Image 1: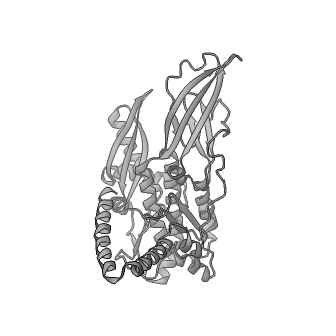
Image 2: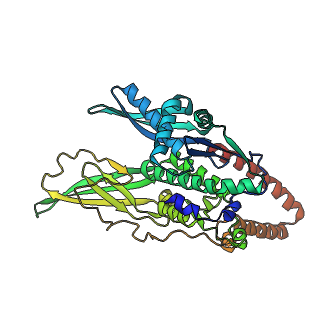
Image 3: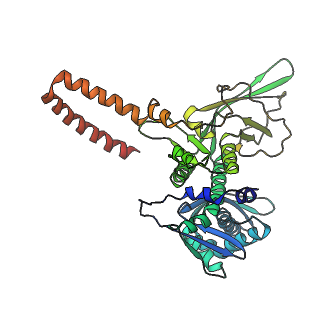
Length: 417
């Protein structure tokens, strides 16, 4: 579906993806590699590292961990593919994992192992895309092609493939955050008896985002903003092309920006981006075999900003919770459950909306309370009032003291953050 849509996308529009001038000293080259008909792309927007959570099986813990590493490298290879996804694609990425897992994995940690019919281990691995690029070149039967992105022709050739890669990376990162990055903290559990013959389990829990994974996703989103010239939406529209911007904010603006603007330039990419940000959060409660489907306001990236506390009420016959010593909450798509999907009825955040977030206009950005421009105007007014009140000599002394205070404050802030 992705490739069919992107094939219909005008190549001339994609030239906007690549900024005519680079001021950051980064490479202008994009490298494409073909392995058994499967094409990989490495360019500036390709992350230096890809974090992967993978599961492996084996007759021993060592074998299970090795197979998990192979799976991790195969996953990382898959998001760098810019040709059609076929059975052959999966075979190629598995082959790359088998041959080069030890050289491509920068580091890993074992999250846990269990034994059923065989050993199952889950790992967290960091895959180096630079090492992966070198190993994919080795696996290729032909030389890699280097595209000089300073030429319009090379930009046109790479633009469509760059769009496909951004689509897959966006899908990979946001799906990973939904599956592994939503934490649940149980605040209280109590059983309420009734004369009806049933008893009700009342569970209060809170959702938040796992800090390390959230930080990783934010780095990727900020990279996307730079690569797609996200701050210049109006400039892109003047070229006669709808940039289809996506606006993501995860906290109040002030000392930190806490928001990004990403131009998608493609209807399918825009739709999928919004879907990944605004879709309901699904939480599976293992011991109760129950699926919670929770709506979010604007974007699930705001979980830490707004907070999300949920009260779950489950009724069962008397003594129906005797064997429920603890509850395990798993985020991500719920498996098929015997219990009906829990309906959100008593949240503190019933006002949460399902509308996709809309980026503010350039005028709103400049005038929004808390924006740097708004604060700068207030500061200038305060300085002028103070100047006229105390005179130029006292004003200079006060400014010197203020400068020292701000410098010390900034140093402390940098050390803390």
